[in-house]
Length: 383
Ligand SMILES: *Cc1c(COP(=O)(O)O)cnc(C)c1O
Image (cartoon, rainbow, N blue to C red; front, top):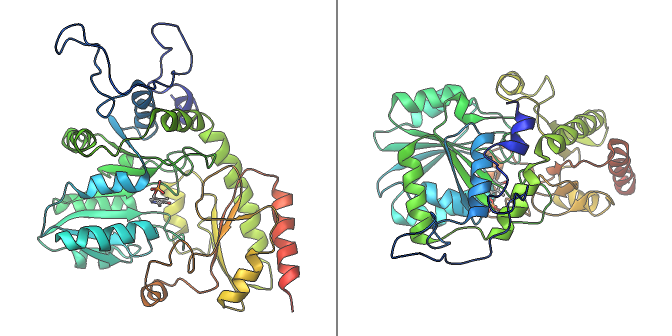
């Protein structure tokens, strides 16, 4: 099956009792048993819920995984993956990383004795040098957030495997429509389904997809035991959103290309970060490991200051000033003061995150309208 067929059909069957084409939203906490422990496969909804199972089956199919485990949020999914570690273990992570991941790593897991090293993963050598006998996990984000650097998943998975470490890829930015890390050698994929998978900015959710039975067993043990499970309504929304994933991502990518070209030619723009441009340092790897270049575009202003960036963002009408990404609507944000404010300024600067950097999540509106919106924001801040 091709990807766009899988988004509709993977792991889906009409519901048994009624033939409903979409799975019902099973609002129940428990299930009747005929006799003690004689039941229809469900005992208690923290453990399993049929709406959740339908979503998990679909997501597993999209990542070509044997299993998927849904969580209450992307952060809960990451939290469960990290809980497979033990004190003394080390994780090598991408330095240009989602702010919430950085906070989870450094403020929750470091105090429990897990060590993190943040490395520019576009350099395989730098990663090689960071390995120690305690390294258990590579934590990869690509494209990275917010600089949209590209990390070579196949090369890094190889390095990790040789040293007995797992490779975990946070695939939220690309979505399975553009990149399938398990096929490139990764051991597990993490998603915030809040973003492209849900696609309509109307839910919070997460998932882990893997073909390792031990990882899957560990994760289902955790959902049963710690309970960070999504409710059935959110599962339904994510499932419904996923049906149009291929179409939405295709249109968003087309729009992003138009805007990235427009920005690259604009006199007030400093630099444009978009993996689809041939001068982007990760362009060749992106061509290999992604089927398109994504719908995220970041750029800095020639006049690199926070107030200037804030003024620009307050003057767009179609682009909504908001955190998050991956929805049908275009969003604009300022990483240094919003999503990445929890990363110390010194570390942000070392990673190349400029004060005026503006991040666009390009939606599925008309490309001309989006370009005109940016054009008029530039006019309104021109001095
Ligand atoms: C949003 C996001 C997360 C966290 O997901 P939530 O659903 O907000 O908890 C993790 N990683 C990336 C790359 C994200 O964009």
